[in-house]
Length: 450
Image 1 (cartoon, rainbow, N blue to C red):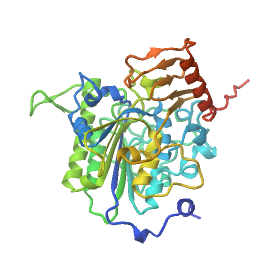
Image 2: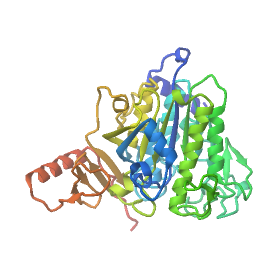
Image 3: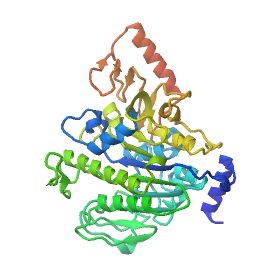
Image 4: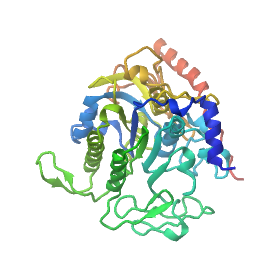
């Protein structure tokens, strides 16, 4: 029996899906954009004085910006949490591929297409067209990894383990897919200039003058412009600004209209991301879809240069901006948000019942977005490997055990380290956190070879 048919049959039962013929004509579209290694503090709408992001500033002025949103400090772990709405102690994904505290190849949890229901699965069952572009950074083979996770089509950078044997790509590195090899035993392929790209099991020819982020954005814009009878979800997992590319195409010079700045600094990379987001927003405008589309912008972890890989707030705090019908323009929310919340938020807006056969850890942000009654987060949970982190609006416990009184601050400034404090309110806060963490277990200890 075809696995995908069986999966969606079971998924349909789990979701208690009604007849697809009843799909409302005005069902909204979703564009989910996740950047790579981009922290909230790097956007001008979050306070950056050096980096200018006018397109994202405009997006925030048209929708809602969350002051405090947590991912995890690692890309693979965050991607699992985002797409499934579930924490690592449920999915098994506490760490990057083939590192300690992540599922082993061949284990049930390693095959995420079989083990999990993604937001693409959810909307596919609601009659949506679904697509993904950019970076995958999760397990699976080229033949099944995307389709089994609910996406109808893809246009992806092939990283280092997902090219067919006959399609090794030269450039920054070469790669040939061999399922018998460790994922870390061969070089990465290009993601920037002359990138290694596959679309729907076919290798896409590229040239030295082709810039990967432009190609992926072209695909997203073309997908938006397609004429279709269905609403759609497209998940654009950007390859930028990962360790920032040293050579970019010209970046529009904001101080000199009509001119471009060349180079490859972190600043210019963030500003190029801003430029690409602007292209997508303009594509929605041209297609006449902006008023019926939820555009969600976020990141997978904090900056590579400052926080990524560390279970601290700088490693987990990412931007979250959501624009769409019914959201008050220019709103800034002090409510806590997790990327686990995107799954149930999309489900509620699309009127898609949540799966009944598994626990969803995310809490829908719809009550916050639409200013209506509903549950709000009391705390945020983040993790990587065997360390865990917890935050409420006031208190923060980082992975190394340091405890902070954040007051009303959300950007890492003016936090007071109260780790050694014996004040009653500090002790009470720590005890409450300890009780919460009992419900959020870390991974089992790794058995060392003798």
